[in-house]
Length: 325
Image (cartoon, rainbow, N blue to C red):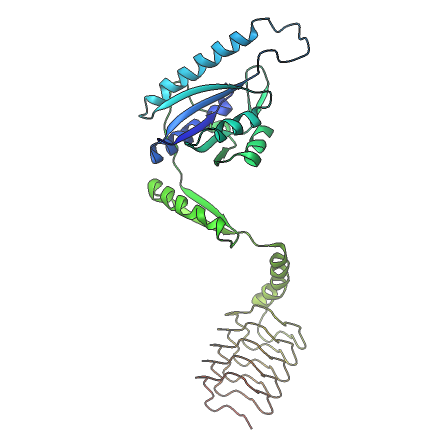
């Protein structure tokens, strides 16, 4: 069974802007393009409209068949198989979703948003939202710009320079990576992975930025005595010469940080991650280092007089010339 890409159209150039993208995917997946138009059922509308002729339905069907047949011929010239179909429906979104659900070979619905027919009736606007909510297959949406409207008689497959992939850390969301990788290889494009963070992490990120950014801009020896930096992410930050006496750094991440000649006397570093930091000649007299990770840290020449380092991890830490009296 050959897969099908369903392309809903309403007769407008806005709606037709999706065709170059559908053509690309048809080539990539060796799929058949199925051009679909929704028309009002006979007997609709139920109310009397004086300017609608009695034979309007036959005229609508004939126009739709001619329109879709013309598009199909132009697309077939690009080497893809094309089928045409019209369905009846009062609500376009429901009709398109139902059609896709009844065709097991439908692997993708490709449509543009905000398409309007020559008579002004809206087909692909809020309709796209209805399809997004109810479609049983993958969906490709395009909001067309003026530059994406195609010239008469000309079709060419779309190409992509960057494929952006939003991820939320959940395994189901990562299933798109296989398809994105195939697109990147076929288009010789780059891929941009974007992490979508939950609200509580965004709140934490704002709080950390309020702490980290000022520190990164701080001149040497700026007074930060008694600063509350508990739990802050200060990885690889340069705090050379700063005064952090009696600061609260409990649980902070200072791995790889540069703390040359920093005054940390009386500071609380309980449970902090200080692995790999350079604290040469730093003053930690009276500091609390209980449970801190000091693995591979450079504390050569540091003043650790009366520092509390109960259960601190000092594996391969450099304590040369340090004063630990």
